Image (tube, rainbow, N blue to C red; front, side, top):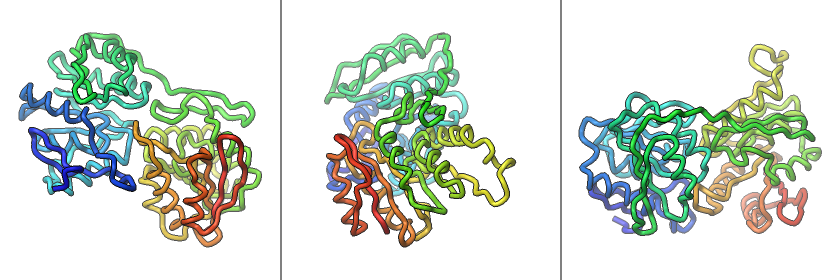
Length: 387
């Protein structure tokens, strides 16, 4: 076994991959917080055979693999996390029947939860929502343990556990990781509504669920790209790739009223938000009100454009992420570009907005053989490449 990709625990040893893989394989599919959490379970003699376990925000399936002998549900906002969990089960030749129920963030885990194990997410709003949804599933004897790297554990996150679950304390730090322990107590918990904000110059009202990027304002990169949309080429099939709240695709639909729009993201909350915003912006395009021959927009969770056929798309719009939880890198953007090159028909265009310092023009020229600067300013650049 490769030492770098092998997680060693009291539950066994597991070879784990990240999805997508980092270019040099430098980042592991787990961290010290996962190790500390599994070590704590061993110390407490948990889980017991008949206990129902909920794992939350298990990025690449490290916890699910280690606990494969138990009754586990894996609850996440990330399709990639669920795909990675299934991949790592196969890689370790674990019984497919033991694969946990993979529950999307927009659904509710099933049944009573005896043990809740959480990796603290980057977004505080997501943590608040998860704890609020989790609370009714717990009972007085439920065990609630969360884990995080110390540098990524703000005091506000600890307070969320105190306010929502009950009395809370933390462990000492070990390998720069720390645990949070909460005792389940009666607490009045009010649901937090989705964020909503107005974009007056676009005549849009946008909502965003808890884990959507820039959930309470239009991010400046998207705004800069939208300012260039008068130059969009004609297109019959358009994809808003990594759609977030869907604003790029919604404004593109106004510009290209006869185009078929597809909104794609690996975040379940992002796709749900994009669908809500599209339906609010185009109520007449709902399934029972569309004009004859008017294409219906599609909304789907996917690992990039993995499900799209070759030479099937005229235009791709993309505001790519350069982080995956707390890790930064261009592996997701690079995958999007490669998949986009494959999906575009001859003459189709890939439009991208990004920070200037990330050097996307070099990657696009390498993949497509060309790259045009649509617009540039001090921080951002809008680029186009033609298949």
